[in-house]
Image 1: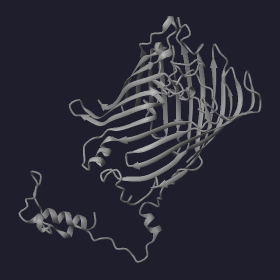
Image 2: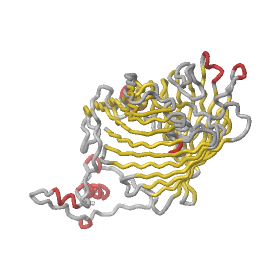
Image 3: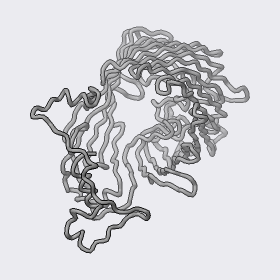
Image 4: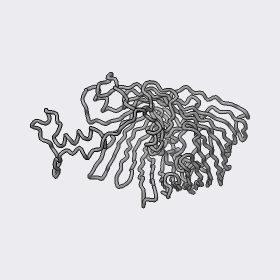
Length: 503
């Protein structure tokens, strides 16, 4: 350490150079077993000497020639910049001196364009498609903001595209579809009750209660249990702990959705996930205990009017832990029950799915990652809430269970209804400058009286390949290919190349 600050502290401890108000009659408090030492200026080195001319290159050598990493700037950046150095300056007091305001307005997101050749068995098509994701963010304090999301090139799950060939029921060759939509896909307020009350009262408090309300996206358990944007309210009680129970960190979140709640278990007359007359009430938690990371949740999906008999309850529990310093493991269960259909109709949400995710810690733990994920789904398990474009409950099991959210890239059945299987793959990140994933996967049907409750007609097998290369800090190239074999259905084949521009 250098400089007068350290000398001043040492002098203060020794009782020297104290302000008169502090030194006169003041008793210095210290921990038991310690004693005050006299100040010795010889233990401190002199301050550095700087030449008259400041040499930038020489100063950079101090840090091994390192420079700032290039960052992607927002498309629009008004007010205080997103990335900046140095003091941030004094904030405004419109919301109180203890809740300072800073005007920040950003528009950011990405623009994805892909060309693909997809054979989904009953439909073969070649197309080029594009989608634009726009996040609009206005932040006016360190904890409060208004956020909106737009997808102007998407409508009803379809994106702006042009098809240059197609058969097996596809649209006419060389047809283009605009799918322009100006609707707001998310619009919500996010804040923290503690700082808000501090600004109003002018007094500090110990309240820590973040919340959000509006048309807001929620994602729990990596999107397996909930991945949806609905109109409602959510609040969290964060940063709790219990030394008695050996819980180092614990959060609880409570949420209510009263509109735009979607789930594959409740469909409208057109066969698509309905987004009206369905409510959701639930709570979720995570905690760090017993050398593991626990997640759990309970929700009730309440159908109204014509969907009243399709209401159901959803329960989930997960444990993520590392074993023997070599295996990272996550075990999850999602269960649904309580649905009582009228007129003996087929239930759409009854059953349980077990998911196990494993990755091996190799000698190159950051770049070479073998993984093996497995699942068993009994009857018709469902997520608590799942947007139509979010994929199925098996989305995270492997790349062969995941579509691309743009061109309709083929995938294995991702419902987990009366099936078992998994994916085994290898991910390699080279020097953290590119990624390749190779995977084989299977979906095996569970035989028995199913009466339409299973989406997969028969056993399925697939091999998949993914490659990603960042061309610049904001331009990404991605390529995917897969081929699937299906016992009771036409085979699947897909190949695509995508260019993604982040801003």
